[in-house]
Length: 333
Ligand code: SF4
Image 1: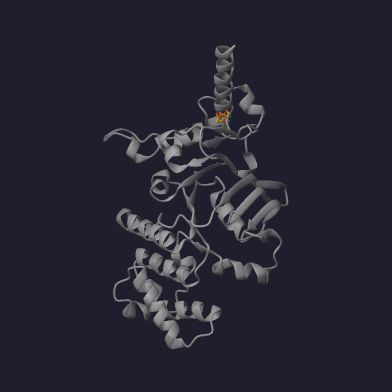
Image 2: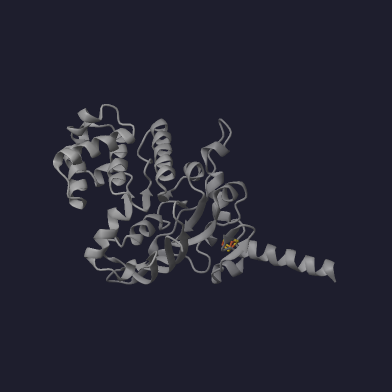
C-alpha cells in the first residue's frame, strides 16, 4: 500500500468575483521512505499542493474535490482534532523561513521541550536531554549553549537545523519541505540538503521536497513531479527528468539552470511568465510560452501519457509516440 495517495485533487480559491482553480486534477503517490520533488516556477501551485496535503490551505482556498489518503486514513474528511494529530506526528512541514515555525520570544530549548512534552508524558529533565541529543544529531555545535538561546541569536542555517531537530522529535512518516534552503547561502544550502537526505534515509522517512530549482532536487529526490499552472505536466525518475526531459516546460526549466550557461553568456530563460489564476490560458496552459505550440494546444488539454519511464501531458510527445507506433506497424506489415 502506498504511504500517501493523492488522487484527482482539485483545490479552488473562492473569491467574490469568481471561483479560481489553483490545483487541477493532481494525482501522485508516495511510498514509505521515498523522496520525491515537486518543481516549477513560482505560482505553479507547488506550495498550495504541499499545504493541501495537510489541509492547511488558508481561506479563501479549499479542497474542492479529490482524495488525499495517508495509508487507510482519508485526510480530506478529517476534523481539526484528527488533522492536528496527523500534522507533526505523521506529516511534518519545514518552511523556507524557519521563523514561520519558531517563536522569536521563546528559547530554542523551551520550544523543543514543549514539543516533546505535548506528545509524551516525561519529565522536563528527560525532555531536555532528548532535545539536546536531537540538536547534536542535526550537527549543532555546543547544543547545551544553543538550548538556552533565542532564535534570533542563531544563523539562518542553524535555525533550519533546529527545525529539522524539532521535526525529528516527533518521528514523522513524511516530511514536506517547502523551499527549505532557498533563503540560505549556497554552501549552507548544500549542508542542509545533505542533512535532510541523511535524516530521511537513516530514519526511513519519506520526503516531499518543494523547490523551484531542478539542480537542488537532482541531489535529493528519487522521483520528480513538474508542475505548471496548477497541473502536473511531467512525472518520472529524477535522473530521467534531468537527462531526458520530455515536456517543453521541463526542458525550459533545465535550460534556465545557471550550470547550463557558459561563462559570460546570458542566462537562458523561458519566455514570458507563469499565468496568474485569473488568466490561465485555454488548452495547454503553457502554450503562450511554448516554442512548439500548435492550434490544437490552444484549445485542448493534453492527457497524461507514458513516455518511457516518465509520464507527460503534451501533444508534441503524444504525436511523436503515435508516429513511432505507426512506423512500427508499417515495418511489421
Ligand atoms: Fe507545448 Fe503543445 Fe506540448 Fe503544451 S501541449 S507543451 S503547448 S507542444
